[in-house]
Length: 288
Picture 1 (cartoon, helix red, strand yellow):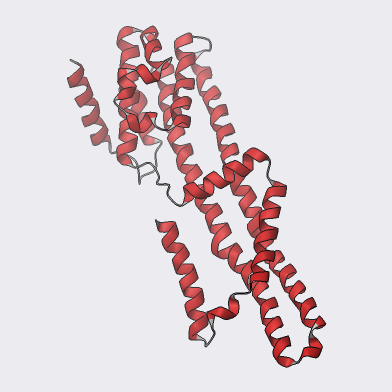
Picture 2: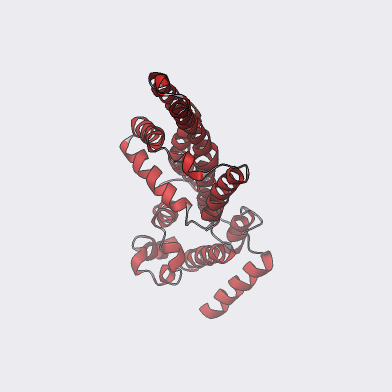
């Protein structure tokens, strides 16, 4: 919603200021310039992007208009899920976690937290972190490095669309110049048609420069930055999981492991220690 409000403000301020200065919006509507600007931009995007990155870029742009960062309640659900899983492992042995980890869809614990399980990538990261703990295939102090490597790989992959959009945004002013040069070529070819025709074609050519700069700094680069922030939020969620699972694997008490995870969150979405303590006590009471 905020993205749409920002877009309306950008367009409204630009057109409004132009009209206040005596301009007419219809003067800016030269279809040929739009074709050149958007056609070349999309072509550059396709040339520069491998197939998967292109798909991810389209998905990330769509997600940028509707995405909301995980809030305090969502993180509290995650911490409660982690605490319940850790308590089962502490009380009944790590082998007791197998039925929950190997098939989360049938787990009574996971079923209580649909917000966590609804996100496939986050659930897979959690499951991939817990499996080595159950299997005993690696030492506890090695698990953090393993999960960090996976987290870094996911972060790098998530940033590919950002780099592509930033490249397109940086190219747009130059594309606008290309459109303007093409317009000037048409203008020179029609110079014998009189000042009125020449003036109209010069205006069309300048529209190309305007659209290139306007598209770069008004839309493409800001959307790339928004996607970058969304990626940071996703990374923080996964880092919260990493901190808790790695701590538990090293032998920390469940409540200590989730407290470390809580402290890894930023202040805007971090549950307070009192809220986490109350949630944990509620779970402990219901388990008795």
